[in-house]
Structure formats: structure tokens, C-alpha cells
Image 1 (tube, rainbow, N blue to C red):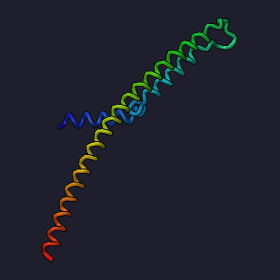
Image 2 (image 1 turned 120 degrees about the horizontal axis):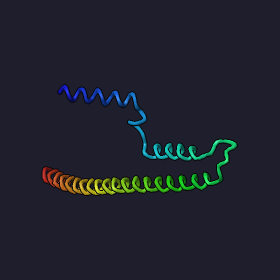
Image 3 (image 1 turned 90 degrees about the horizontal axis):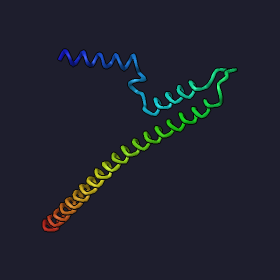
Image 4 (image 1 turned 180 degrees about the vertical axis):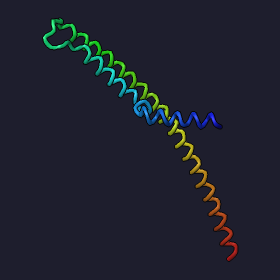
Length: 119
């Protein structure tokens, strides 16, 4: 029990000290890394660097675009799986509702028979 409480306190401490790590979205992290790498390639003013840095920036942009598309594809696949699970659950609920309606109809018929016989 003591170990669990220490783990819980440590987890809360990490979340409070590093909130970005607890909430960080992979896409946000990807965009931040792209911005850092892209800006790092810009040469200082009055530099004798050739225009090759623009090709480097284009390459970095293409690389991160591909990573972003891959991440979006993965997220869409996960959503599709969840959507299909939800559809299956809705189908099950619809079957249960039909069965409830059938049973209630039987009860109503029986009740009307009993009511007419008792008159």
C-alpha cells in the first residue's frame, strides 16, 4: 500500500511540474520540433552561406509534412476502429430494443385478453 501511495504522489508531482509532458499532443510536439529545426537552418544576417539552406529548409518541411500525414493517418485509423466498435454496440442496443418491444407487445396482448375475460 505504501508503494502505491508513493507512486501516486510521484505521478502527481510529475504532472504538476511538467504539465506539457502529461498533456502533450504528438502533433504539437512534431510542430515544435519542426519549428526548431527550420529556424536552426536560417543563416545569420550578412552570412556568406550559400542559398543551400533554403533547400535544407525545404527538405525539413517535406520530412515533417510526411511525419504529420503519417500521424494523421494513424489517428484516423484509431478513430475508425472506435467508430466501428460504437456501431456494433448501437446494433446490439437496437436488437435489445426490438426484443423489449416484442416482449412488451406480448404483455399488452395478454393484459387485454385478461381484461376482456374478466368483464
